[in-house]
Length: 172
Image (cartoon, rainbow, N blue to C red; front, top):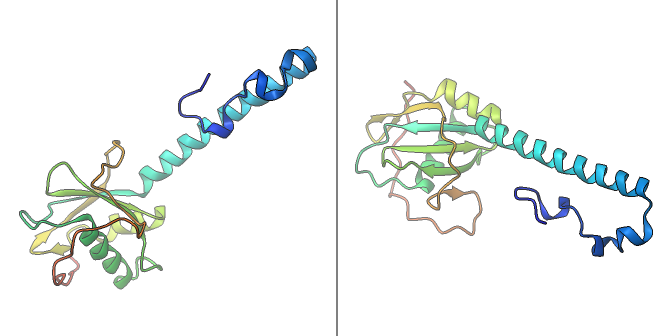
């Protein structure tokens, strides 16, 4: 049987795939093998939980986006990458892993590559101006997985064309 949420490599092997457990293994070896598989499954579950917690710590919510501006995830990603670098809040020119536009056109969720960059954004970027709107930068409370409207860092993802120019960002 396949256990949901467990990677294929961590799934318990079927008896036929192990060369027939009953034919070649003693009860002691069978018990040890079963304990190892259970430990591997538990370890995978813990790793999944840790990764999800780290992901939440890297995410911030951006609200009060300019109305009717037709901002795309790619434009927001470029804007915040540039802002983070120019304000010396990130060492890398590409500190954002993903941008997910919110269900409302006036919000977005930004996932940074590192927790410390998300913390710096929370501390320093609340109130930054974009197209005349003071953006709210807060801790993300979103728990939904990214939608197809996400903009991952993969260069193979086609993005909509950006506006001709981004306005200069001003600190609050």
